[in-house]
Image 1 (cartoon, one colour):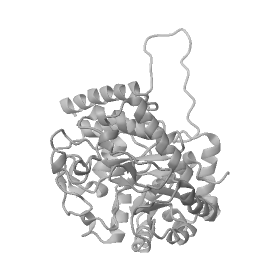
Image 2 (cartoon, helix red, strand yellow):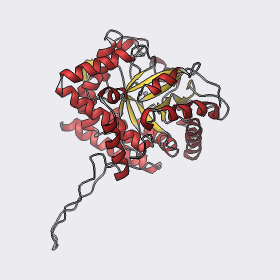
Image 3 (spheres, helix red, strand yellow):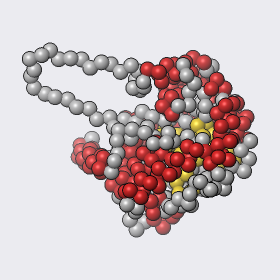
Image 4 (tube, one colour):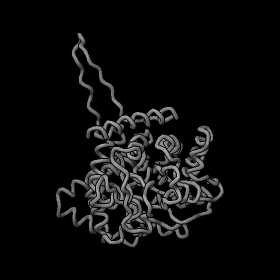
Length: 402
């Protein structure tokens, strides 16, 4: 606590003001008054449910939970890759009840072409519980969908330098095209801060111009516009890669033991995620697979209860879905058995496991179910993850009417 936390609190306020001035909405602010009053104090009405859902959406969540047996509930915690070169591979995943599919590779198909497939998946979903359809649609060198109608998106670095009206128009177009294609989850924007002059030595982000700027204020302003632009078209964003990959010197996709020795739970990077996660469009947060020496040197963030539960859930107060980066093929997690990757992430407080290939799905589901049956504390973590996943689907319109 002490001085560091007070500094972080002041930074959080400053970043919130930046975000609000650029059109940001949402948040968890509350107000209170002091002093005396001649009238008796009133007790605020308790929320209808812990997530503040409208009554109809809460009923949808309750009904969905009741309709799913435990294996089906666990299946909802996985988002599984489907190659754009072979989209039919997603059919069995969807009918098998996975929580979502992730379109990977590159495609020159139009939004209507993609929509023909995603519409088929929506219709085939068991019990009408539609899967997330996710893609990496950032811009620049990271743009999964590139066909006519998707536009040629500039890099995040270039997006961050656009005047606000031009950036808003760009993000509105992103949301429009993705929604037309049936994509409901964009694994963007990157909220990582790459300090000025260090981009070339930052392999995962700076080397590809994936950052929106070199300061927290720049990132919050531009990334917030992306979240809003997507959300205006019912496309959910995913802020990545908590607590930040902008200061590392290795890429977790291709390198083991990537360590960040400077990011702290009281610094500008975590504060930026805090502000962005409060957006009224209810974004996800993707957690990094690097290790953060000043936060939890004992484990990669994706397996760290300190990072996920203490900092992201506790310090920041984030209640939405927490998703992994890819834990199927990434070198950073290669030494952990596949089933244990899913178990450790959920035990740390996470929600959705992202795997680019389906090869390890059954092993991961079986490991989660085995631990769930043997460990009541872990079973409660699974309960919480399933509810969080379904609440997000209710907000996104992916649950059947109650």
